[in-house]
Image 1 (spheres, rainbow, N blue to C red):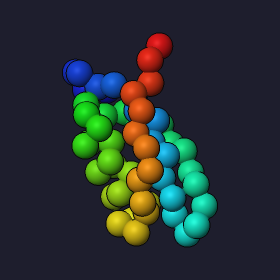
Image 2: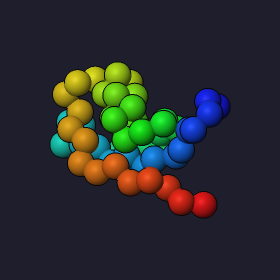
Image 3: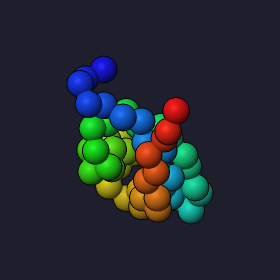
Image 4: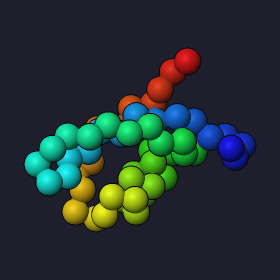
Length: 53
């Protein structure tokens, strides 16, 4: 893990179904990029929430 990394819960839609994934990133923008690169640019991100311990 990198310094300053936080955990985000990303909810996104792909092929008409909703998915939820945890992403360890420094910011919401980086979490969005991680999901887009893994699941393709056709996935629509609905919500990004910071996970608190």
